[in-house]
Length: 214
Image 1: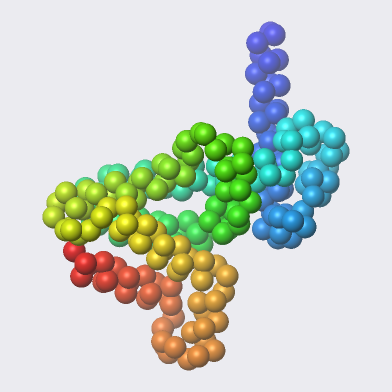
Image 2: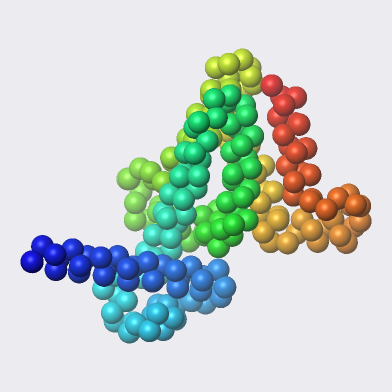
């Protein structure tokens, strides 16, 4: 009986943490990190600010927890692609998965790759620890690029440099899309008239580029 009560208590704490993180995510991406206070987060879930501090010591710790959760989600999406045997086809699929993740989880994407606060927290409070979530996501890409090289692609190219180039290109494309600049430029300057899926068109051009690099 005592063990059951302990399990129920821990489940309750987990549920509260999830509610806190969901409320914070909405506020951070809606109002901005600086404009959001711990009181705002507490009010969103009908909590007292004092009670909130029993779970997280400040909003920096909250945003870092969200940062971790987002990278776990992205890595999980990448893991599905391990069944794609051809490494170059897997690389292209990773690009599509990355884009889909950024569009379907734009709030998480903003926290993970655009906002500076999570990395600042990481560098201040976890400087001597391995960043497991981010490392896992990056090495899913790196290992795929390395597998391409092992089968004869991208000869003479440094693996980390190529991996970071691919990631940077995908990040730039996703950020332009999520922030509205991509469609704004294309519409205002009448670029690519008649192209309905601008994001898809640019991605396919990037794929053709790396195909030529093989």
